[in-house]
Length: 350
Image 1 (tube, rainbow, N blue to C red):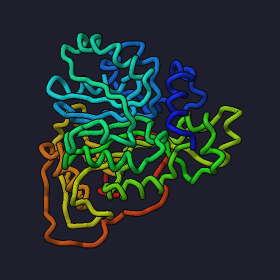
Image 2: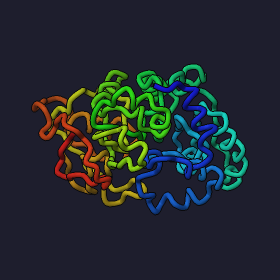
Image 3: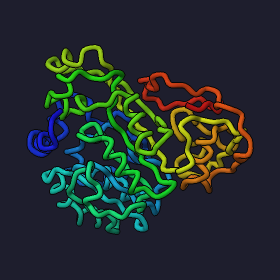
Image 4: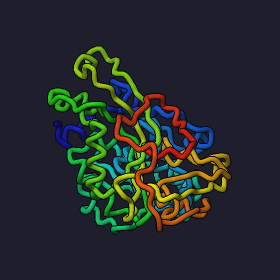
């Protein structure tokens, strides 16, 4: 596996812009929603030109939140999130590549003038050693990351560091690249494949194990899309492996269980979250229509009741009775490859 120094060199020296990428792995595969486009239009072109993300890491209901962006690069997501949290919130970007951070910091004043407030800061450091940045434990509402975890040389340490920094009820909301099988060592060691977010991609089930080991017992898949490796020199190396750009959310809630248990509970969405008047998608299996009584497992109940989403829901039931495993739970390959994010609305769980 390439070292941190190799990754730094790839992103700091070899890549000078998005056009230098050799595959479509590290690029935004989610269609930018209409409400986000005006925010991106206010970001400096130099920042936009060096964007290497693979998804959309702007979950709803961020006003006033404190957010940490892991592997922020030149700061595209930081500056988008800064507008969503508003003047009462703040965004901290962390990256280990000095060249990327130089671009991000160069345009701090530009964005403060654009937004009418300054709520952004950038720190140089590795996401495997977040404790070295002297960030206060339990001080972030949301941690995001966009196509960076695959580049990490110690993914377990990243997730453990995130757990330490999140407030109770906070979440990690992040996009990354996953694969349907464990990759051969030759693929994992190839510097181009690694730099292009493929060599370090986790087998999806290994990711779930890492997340649970770090204290996130119920990872939720928000959306996913399969992509093909078409570069002639690289495609033969990956063989029959199937790669997916996927967005997950991990909640820091102490009471979450490692299975979706049925306590006879339900929620009703009030339709009050901005840009989501008709339904709220907690994840790819929970599209909760406004006004509808929606049966949920105990974990989903807590993900809504013990987080910033609580004021937007009515809650039915408690944990006084248990009816066994919630119907519909399973452990097969979770990705559909469709990228639609459409979810069954019949109360199915994972």
